[in-house]
Length: 357
Figure 1 (cartoon, rainbow, N blue to C red):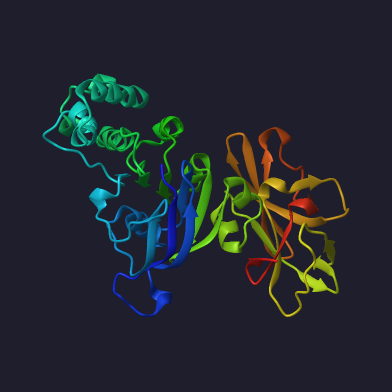
Figure 2: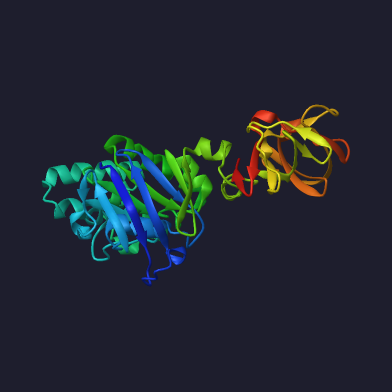
């Protein structure tokens, strides 16, 4: 339960002086005590480097790391009072499940009765009470990862809980329930949780705040709603959401925006964008089918559709540009190929050179 501050933290594994090649470019950031954060981005973007810098497995090339107001940059991992869960199971092969879960508590001198109560509490939440007496080495990969998770969650006095893609080996059906259980435990313990993943759905359903990363930089930080509703760049718009955000090239004429011959109103203040690449971004969820021409309505042709259970994604083209439209299955498919698409102004954002205007 600690506020974590990264002050001008940067890291290069090969000590390169050119910061453009660093695994983690210089970063200033504060993570508040008791909140859950998700680091989201493709492989190699710097997520795990941040996590390992906080845990002490990596000593940063520059900058300072503070827990509350205490500088822990050079403090060994064992003295940082953190718990860390890795991508693949890490268990003590010679111990039972109970002994694996209780090991962090034994090392800190907890009394036997308190250890037993805490281990059973965590085991019950993770639904592994019936396995406490079994040898950990005889468990399957997903069960072993549950043990790793339990060992990270069993302490209620850590400064932070760091989780590096902990659900990778868990079967898809169990992931959702397991995320709920981790959140339930964290709500009781009020820990600072930093969760690394490349799965946007996992991040958006788990964290209070997301940090989207690319090439060692944090591109945008905010709540799941903020990043979905108003991404600050095409990168975030494409990375968050399924299907990705639509981006339509437009032209600025005086203070008005045109897609082809259709004038479009947006939620952005109309920017003076002459000489720049400008586009209107809108989520597939917010485009609707119109019955005819009107304000912020464009003509399109239906190319096909994909079914996703209760929703369909229409694949359309207008002015030579592909547009995805997400509609409920109950709405049914359009009768013909020619469509009118309504782009509500309050959900349309203007982007200049790939960034929110």
